[in-house]
Length: 244
Length: 54
Image 1: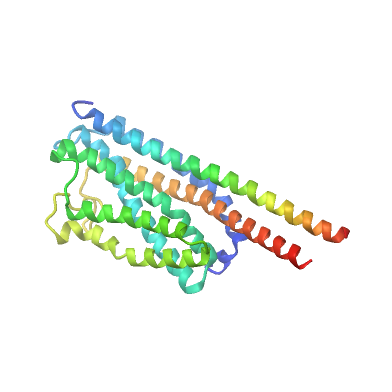
Image 2 (image 1 turned 120 degrees about the vertical axis):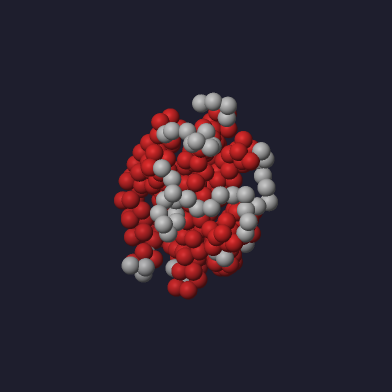
């Protein structure tokens, strides 16, 4: 399976087939989930209407961590098996992950002001999430820092793997340290602790966000593969001209 | 929506703007890459024809 996907043409065909379905899941999931959360779900007895921010904040936080984990797996695959498509998939994922992390940070801040009375605190969860955002930016910057794409890919892959240490720190920061951020209420061993009226729009938005990731990833990976093929075509044409 | 409506609407607006912006930028990037690839193929094809012609 892994080796079959190493063929860029096959990977592009697969992504082309998945793309319309991913776009449909993204549009339906995000419109229904966010619309439900914004207009029809009940206010929380403590948070009031500001609980609606959670319909964006929580799926964005899940996506920020999920995409970084996917990048780390793709980077390991690229480093160990020299899988060319895995490297490009990791590269294409980074801006999407950075966007979700930024959404998580901004919406968290917008929720914090009315609820905690402050835009920001140097709490373990918030700080580790900010570090995740910097890791995404660093990863993107590393790809741009080298002229040789293979060296850039290796350096970025190592950063993605080292940065993956931050993922369990984010997840368990609310358990390991005394934080202002509330502990997990959906992904717990005992099951979700929130009411189904709030849980359902949250889960539908999360599914829409997954669809969005796959859709945008397919667009960006296609662009990366075509650009790389265009460079190879131009390089081999120039070599042929010099030889002939 | 009560006292904190501005925070809620602003959160939704930021999320929608960022996600739509990134999707649009990705789509435009893909179209540009498709054009670049087609041009490179055309150039390579011209070179090959030129060599065959010579």
